[in-house]
Amino acid sequence: MWKIFVGFVVFAAAMMFLLMKAGDKVDLQGESHGQTQVETAPAQGTKAPEPAPAAPAASAPTEAPKIEPAPK
Image (cartoon, rainbow, N blue to C red; front, side, top):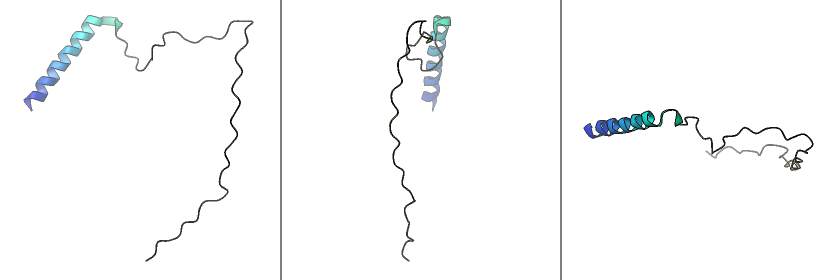
């Protein structure tokens, strides 16, 4: 049990050291995937790309399947 406590203290100390050294350079925004720029509207005079055609709707079953009771 004491090993878990020592491990936690060591990990917490390492994280505090990292945060103190990095200062405001640490990004705590979650999964940003390297996107730093905000997408903007296309410039005037350029045409936006055409949207992809919609896929045809799948045929849905007309009624639910019948469930028979289990034999006794």
